[in-house]
Image 1 (cartoon, rainbow, N blue to C red):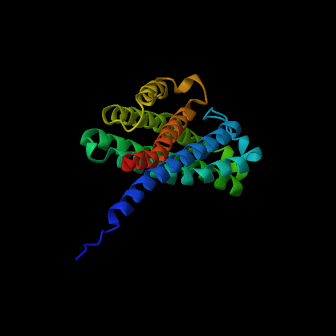
Image 2 (spheres, rainbow, N blue to C red; image 1 turned 180 degrees about the horizontal axis):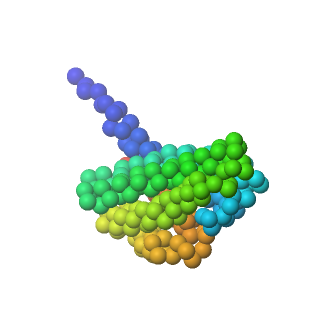
Image 3 (cartoon, rainbow, N blue to C red; image 1 turned 90 degrees about the vertical axis):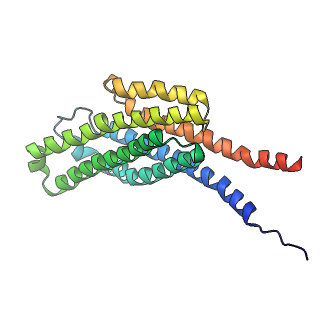
Length: 231
């Protein structure tokens, strides 16, 4: 009697090839969305956290658009974390994996918190425009949002980059030059945030580079598998 061949292995192989590809695309989306939001915010809101809120009367709509992009960027970043863990597989080191996952989730929490505070400022301004900008509450909220994003979230993003770069070197999930570049850019985030207002763009740019590499690598896998099967 002829024994039938189950199609499950092939199905699982195709699913495994597609999942990293979809997640790499999500990493690209995260980078584009976050960079768009950051650029809109930098063009609209002064970098001085003690400013008096003149932008609320002129650029509030543009800021609101930027803040509405943040949740979608956060969702895409979760997928990016997923693809890196998927590529690690059995090679995952518990220590670095914990710091990697923890710093990624902590960055998202801070990003959402800063965006929520900024959104609350816009909502409060719509209800009590003059009273808000002249109050200590506005100054506190503005300084709090600035500090969370430009001090704490940026430093956590640097930790994420250092950990991810270390994992890339030891496991080969990405090219070594991307990991070395990650170390250099992480140091810039740790010690050079005050150099320019645009330093915060370093993190999404590096994620874009990493995601593009993963996407290209995954696109090459089917051709490699076909070449091996033909031999």
